[in-house]
Image: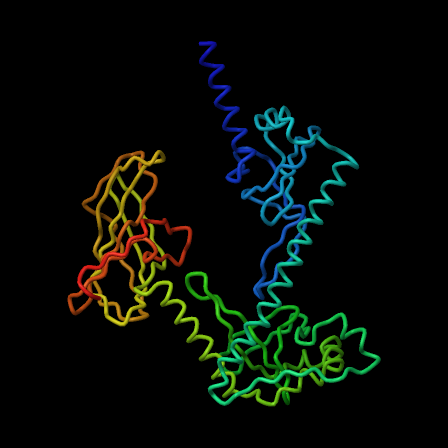
Length: 408
């Protein structure tokens, strides 16, 4: 009995150490009382990372390092991919971490100093990422301009000589990042509304502002869209907007090709490039989402599929494998969805009941293969990289085979 208790303690210690020192570590209500991000960076709608401080968290994961421990407060300080966090441990975890010599035990000035050092590391990291994102937007616009040459359009961007008294402002502010201070811009062409502190502007002409947004597409892709909006009254009288325009008037009003036709042409080219890349990654389609469950050991299943191929789908057969936590196969089978599903159309199917049953320890499902049957009878077998999932959380890699049945 003593040996058994000792063994259990060793196992508990092993798993606690594993939880603390691996990238898969996770702190939740089960092992901690308080989880707070002292400094955290979150991506905003405009693609830039914004700094957030003193934010309470439900979960702390993706841990990079455990850099300090305060035994007086039972607080572990950890660096994650995007945050500097303080985690107040429960009694069991505090006992274990207290004995770990690899984690420095600090308090007072020494603790404050190392916290500030970690904060500075995060600040530098995300300052660099924001600079790269600004360069990426500019490079994307330059590429779209090049693609638009065949339409007889040429995008010209010149910065004229600056007024001497505004040199300091111009040296500290990019002319195309125009402050709008939360004023709402509503595109006159697509009616999309956009509200941020500043907007990436490609020009101001007459009473309209022309700006660029990077829209999120499928499978992690994105594409640039240009928009035009009549300058709203509350922005037209905003002091910081007027000062920025005064300082950069030559640059902001220099482009003579800004019009609805130019915007339509640029957006067409940008979206066409996005569709071409989407079809390159997923030439036969992709799963928008899928899920499964068990009810009295009976398997339920649902999925949504988007067809990116020119031919219309008649049937789609989804083959699956269910395993437990140690990768034992517990069940295999397939479900058939019936179309038709035309190119760039989506359809969804669900089975609240099925003829498949599995064991009680089943925990993971993997889509191993999909067979698409088209209206003309040809088939395409999708495995490996041809199985594309818009939601990466649902995607599980299969073998890199590329098997054809017939000639799709």
